[in-house]
Image (cartoon, rainbow, N blue to C red; front, side):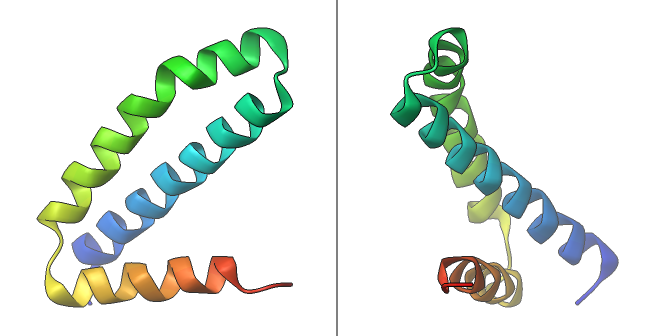
Length: 74
């Protein structure tokens, strides 16, 4: 994987973490943070979708593996 490819995957993972954080703030209903999260969530989702569409097959595979690892219980 090229450094650029890995950087794209890392960026996608960062956006995914932001999406998860938005969901957590909204679920907790913690005031201004929940409101900000609700406003930002569609932006993060759109950026994630756009970035994923630009990935190569190998990059998609790397991202999928990384996301699956996040889902595994610690």
